[in-house]
Length: 323
Image 1 (cartoon, rainbow, N blue to C red):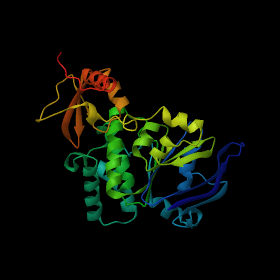
Image 2: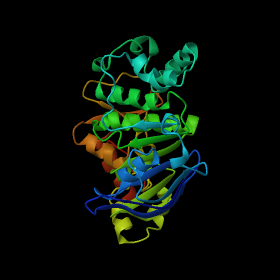
Image 3: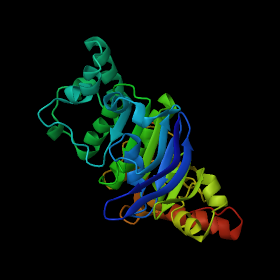
Image 4: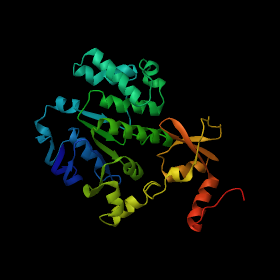
């Protein structure tokens, strides 16, 4: 779908942001680019939609050079999500999402139906949110609108440049879950830049690790964990593995809920896909957590359960509580 051939970017002051990159991004793939600050990841992303011009090499989309596309045609078919989402403050949510479909002269009915479907996809009730202004939404809600605005005109490609890094951990985790569900449903070719390895491991089909403008390794999350190319990759991946990659799942630790409950006020609700490390972080602040899956409370967890879980591992025998 997207192919880089010997792509380099050198700025007038002599800075080499990207050096001789060769790679292929497959159709329908969620492809994550990650690396330390200054590694060239955002430059690489912005060259795809010609926000930054190449110095050397060629980028192809569907075997056609990006330089051969009409610039408006190219960008209309590439959704773009930034860290600062920049919704138009004077427009309603419906108007914000409808911008590109209207530029592409979609029928009003088709646009409206699409907007409503997208809002439902990210858990925002159309009747409640269609006519609201951006200032009436939380940061996480605004970022959801930014994501679906990028999807509104049914682009072939979606570019995301650290879209969740400014959000609080709970909003960020929920949006990551939303993105996974959306991708499973619509299978867009997505290029996602992040500096967070845990986020990359959670979302990616494949991950490209960069350093000093060059690709160090490309592979699936499991390939990077099992077969790092060098010490840099091993260190970069190893210190950010989630509990899931380490083989610890919340299902292994929690007590299942047998009937519908309301979470008590001192409790905190987290997703079942929350990493083991993030769950431990939450337990430093809360005595008890409620585990949620697909909108339903499925389990509870507290500090004593964690201690018991690891005691079981050490002892090799099932330990019962209360004694």
